[in-house]
Amino acid sequence: MGNRLPAIVIALVVLLGLAYSSFFVVQAGEQAIILRFGEIRSVKTEPGIYFKLPFSFIEADNVQMVEKRAIRFDLNDIRVQVSGGKFYEVDAFVVYRITDAERFRETVSGDVVAAEQRLTTRLDSALRGVYGLRGFEAALSDARAAMMTEVRDQLRPDAESLGLTIEDVRIRRTDLTKEVSQQTYDRMKAERLAEAELIRARGREAGQRIRAIADRQVVELESEARRDSEITRGEGDAQRNNIFADAFSRDQGFFDFYRSMEAYRRSLTDSDTTMVISPNSEFFRFFQDAAGTVPGSATASGAQ
Image 1 (cartoon, rainbow, N blue to C red):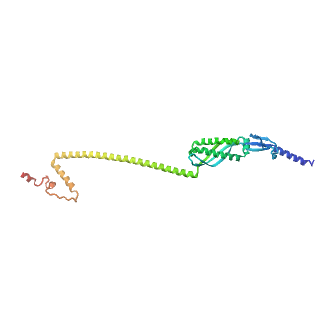
Image 2: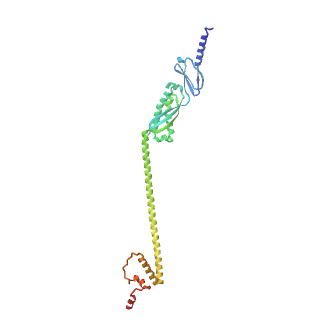
Image 3: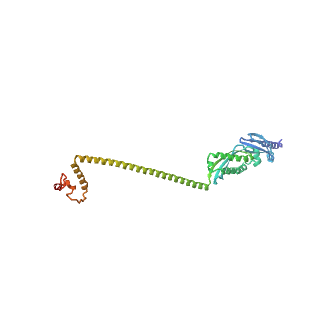
């Protein structure tokens, strides 16, 4: 019995090893590809415990696990040319699923990295084609969603040939390259300067128009004021003449005396005034006679 114990233990270990290698577990979010001597025998897509032939070391049955969940991969700094001829840098990402594990195994040996390398080439080409038909502004407008749908549709046939299904394509960033950025800045600066100059020109034009209107109004107001003042002055002169005429008709002597006093006042107000005139002139008649009689007038009357 003692000589048979090691053999029994070895047999149990072998049996346990065979039993362990005959089962495998598929987790949620995974799918299993069963390979028998390098050939695909079946694909398990549901979670659970499954049986396979042991001796995977001699490639009897091998199991390759691949993702069942959505996978995202990013593509950065793609240089694309838009319809205007300028270049831009684009960051994008793709969301896909492995929906045909058998084809996925056959085309890229179940290697996600290899599959994404092939998708990268096609995505780069699709982005260049879609951007090349549009201007840069389209990527910043509502047309962006339509552009991404177009890229996705172009990418799907190649993805299906790899056993993949493209669920979504999105643009994360669209930026100007350094050269285009400087050119765009210079263009925007020139446009703003031109716009500012246009606004200033319109302001100057409006200012000249307002000043012209104001000058015309000033001329009109001054003309109206001069007209009104002339009318008022004429009315005043007429009223003054009427008053003088009425005063003259009432008392001619007092009127003559008043007019002479006004003449004296106006003529003699300035102390520097020098007058060369005969004392016997009619101008000084009220200085010599309160009645205003001109000297020699009586003699002249008698002679006549």
